[in-house]
Amino acid sequence: MPAPSDPTKWFDHAKLRAWREEAGLRREEVCFRAAPLSYPYLSNIEDGRQTPSVELAYRLAELYGKDPAELFRTPNGQVTEAAG
Image (cartoon, rainbow, N blue to C red):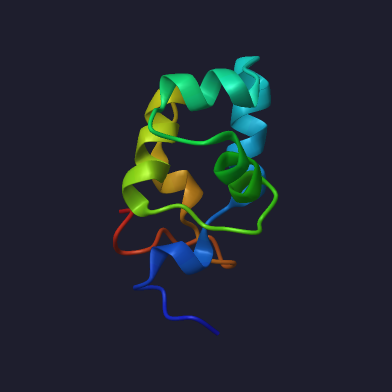
């Protein structure tokens, strides 16, 4: 089990996608607004194939008007150190 001190191990990919869909934004729009961000990279992040840096995760959360700490929760619901 990964240590909670590494927030990228507990990144919630599905939540990031849900936030984008809730905001009514297409991936292309997000890439433009969160530049520099490529469409393939955002796609890989949302699909769970890659994990963003903490900095990018925070930028995306801000874009959606959400609390970035929500993207870094361990399976038992704790916010990881870097996110909290």
